[in-house]
Every structure is written in structure tokens, then in C-alpha cells.
Length: 151
Image (cartoon, helix red, strand yellow):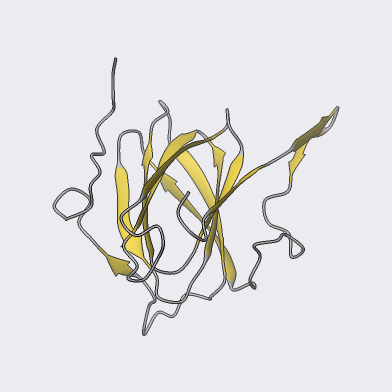
């Protein structure tokens, strides 16, 4: 596992009214602080990534559909520099992924329908000076291929 990354298996609590799933708690061992919560979606087969942050930690949860979330550690001085982590998360595997600053990340919708992500982050988005740095999803030096692996 990339240094600072955490994959927390989430518990779904169902009853006759519906279901509840806690995604991020302030008493989680890896919780830093609250900045904002946002929702993003991804259509089937689309790759959103790569990007990274200098300051922000992400707590990413897929609440509907299935996604492949991929992380790459390109941080100088990290004990896991060069490591890739791949997670298959969503409706069939409710997991919250903690992504520390400096770790490149992206995701691809792998289910047949649009997937929905809730991301709780440590910093509010600064429209005039965003803490977001993008890398082309396919033309880069990251040792990862977004294509599906059949076999």
C-alpha cells in the first residue's frame, strides 16, 4: 500500500426504511480536517485523472455504480515512490479511499451505468488558486494502463 493511503471497508446498516453508510468520521484514525464535500460522476468507460494536490487529502467513496480508483506515488522521499495501488470500489464493495497530498489519482467507471463519487476533502476549493495539478490520463510517465485486463 502506498504510504499514507488507507482503504477503509465501510459498513452498510440496512433496515425496513432503507440503509445508512458512514463514509468519513472525525474520529477516524486517518482524519485530518474538514474542507468541503462534493459529488462527481463518471460515465461508463471514462477515465478521470490523473491529478494530485500539494496540500489536500481526499476521502473518496463511490456511492453508486462501480469504479476502478488508481493511485500512483510520485513523491520524492516517499518509501513507496513508484508504487501503484488499484481499488475496485462501489455498490458491490463499499470502501473509502484516503488519498494523501502528492499522490496522483484517477478513476474509471467500470460498471454499465454512471458511477457517483462523494469526496470529502481537507481544503475548500480555491477557484482563484486551485490545489489541483493535472496529468494526461494516457500520455505520461505513470506505469499504468487504464484498459481492462481480460483473461
